[in-house]
Image 1 (cartoon, one colour):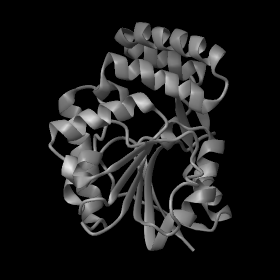
Image 2 (spheres, rainbow, N blue to C red):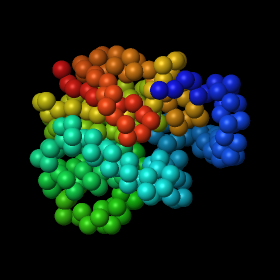
Image 3 (cartoon, rainbow, N blue to C red):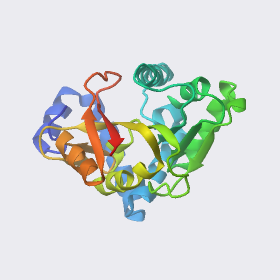
Length: 250
């Protein structure tokens, strides 16, 4: 949980406490302003951000400071889901699968053909293909697909037993989350659940640059309810600093 990171007083205190991070933040701000001038829509903006990030380092592009952290956070996602409902016979949809930080472990665990991963960034999906090769998972036949929205209209109804989105809504404006909630129930099988993480704040929802978004738990719970989804806060998640929520249809 956090306060408002976009407040000037918070940023000044943070800069004084972490002076080594000031210059990287200024560079990121300049980059985002440049990209934002060309891409007003969220998908176009974030797709270009990811293209540049993947070009620099695929692991850093999905929010891992090192290969060791990439492996550790993927392990944490896998351990949590397998301990909390994911079975090898389930059909799984991962929204924002990235370069398969957690995905390669899910693919390895699930029966062949039962993993579908989607992402708005074609570049990060190219990196995902390389991950499959590195871990020798080609015979598991995962489906990796670039998307432009979260309507998921091309997917079959009631297909997925488990839907997962890690560090996705932490980078999404509310209208994108609303779009996902409006359509996710159609592809969820009876008894399915949807786990996602998000940046939680106990103060007013806000954003930092155009990349990091902070929401109140009640805000996302109420949004889910408007689309017929019941929400449960999962306070047992400790894989990273984000909060976790589980949705069920009906």
